[in-house]
Picture 1: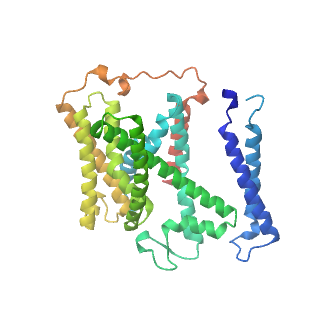
Picture 2: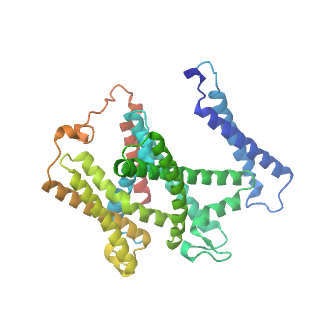
Picture 3: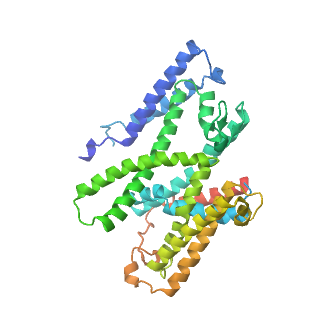
Amino acid sequence: MRKHFIPIWFFIGSLLTIYGVLILGSGIYGLFVPPSNPVVMSHLHIGIWWGSGMLLLGLVYVVRFRPNRKDM
Amino acid sequence: MGVHWTGIVFGWGLAISFGYWTTDFLVVQRVMAAKDLRSAQLGTVIGAFLKMMVPFIVILPGLLALAVLPFHLVPENQGGLPNVHTYNEALPLMLARYCGPGLLGLGVTALVAGFMSGMAGNVTAFTTVWTYDIYKPFIRKQAADSHYVSMGRWCSLLGVVVSIGTAYLVMNFSSIIVYAQAVFVFFIVPMFGTVILGMLWKRTTPAAGFWGLLAGIVTSFALWAWVKVDPGALRHVAFSEHAKDMAENVYRAMWSLIVNVVVTVAVSLFTKPKPEHELKGLVYGFTELAPEGHFPLFRRPITWAAAVAVGFVLLNVLFW
């Protein structure tokens, strides 16, 4: 039965990936369509950096702890 | 805050911090759920690492807010006016100022997740204590499990409603942290004295535990009421004419712990101790602990506890 368990880290990775996609997406959108009331220091485009970081981290976890991985 | 070093070391460091780590239900329930002693110890040690970062997570953004926000923040009891923001709004204001769409959602999600985690833990504690420690042993001893489950569910609902109600009490305090510490010192600190003596001193008797705990709680409430009725009393409680709300909490913790320990020891000496065979598994000296010698050094809780201790000393030296 144990081999059917999905590691909790996979769910955490999935969440990070989804959040990363959403934040990166909104960051890229803001790059091309700047908001009418920009936040302070919006020229740094923190959404793109933060979203990229979360997406990468999430993907690492998803790949590393994906279900049915041979060595798990 | 007007806190003398005795308050920082004995009130904050000994009474409140040790009380939190040994008796707060949010910590205890996680330790009890651990699969073995080593996991429980390591869980607490890892928690200690995170706890040492709290100043950087909580205080640093607050100080930054004070420096960069274009308006002056005021205490909670001076808020409520248009365009006037309180200390408690520092983090949401910073989020709104620096985080655009996407990141703002993440920030709000993190805040709500934090509230929910704390709330869930406290409501669980409320439900467990009422159903298992009061309702089952004293009110309805023989009932089907389904009855207790149902009681627990209703109790959870009541706990949430009571929590929302108590949130209004915060408006009488200068900030959430002052309120939280005030409530904390009423119960957790006296409980720490009882637990630590019962755990480490085989001579402690059940009657001493009860009277010591009661004396500690009464002391805490009495000091609070004294300062509430006569604010000038704070300089006697906290040894300083410059003492503020938080200094009262810190010293109240120290006094209630002292009273608790003195009463517990005194009553223990005048009451009959429990036989040693009844103390197995309860008192440290009579409990067999699983050996850890077969684990490599870096997997032993003691190694990481030592690292926490070193970090604790370094941070204190750095920020004293």
